[in-house]
Image 1 (tube, rainbow, N blue to C red):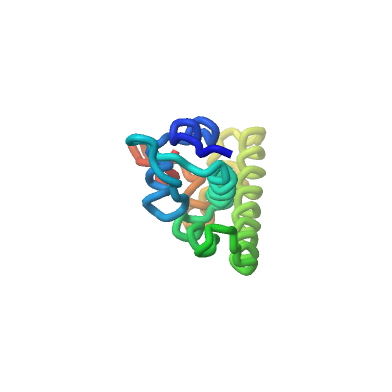
Image 2: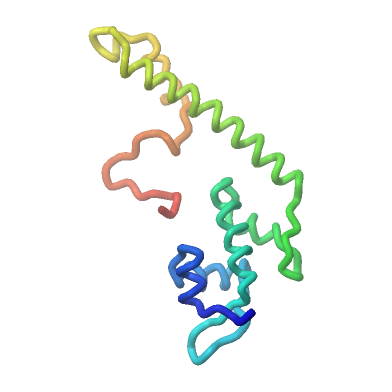
Length: 149
């Protein structure tokens, strides 16, 4: 197969070219050369980008994802690392489930005020103590996202 131009890789992967250049800088992908000033990539880069996207969706940092590839560029994923991330996700799911159920209750609660609802008050106490994950706490106006979205 012929190499793909950076614009074609960006289009197929649904990523801006700047992200591809950044991933190359981080060592996540490598260009196969240039055609004029434009980077060219082996078609296999699309599978690698899919693995990177999957890792990002699972919550791995780019630095962690770099470690998931061997020197030959082939995936070499540490199963212990995957298991630890799955455990972390289980904890997040439990917290989010409690939060969702509490919000659904508060939305349908017959109490005259949310502050008179014991379930809603428990949710507030949980948020005050840090039990509610920061990612699901309402952000203050003008707060910057740390998710990169």
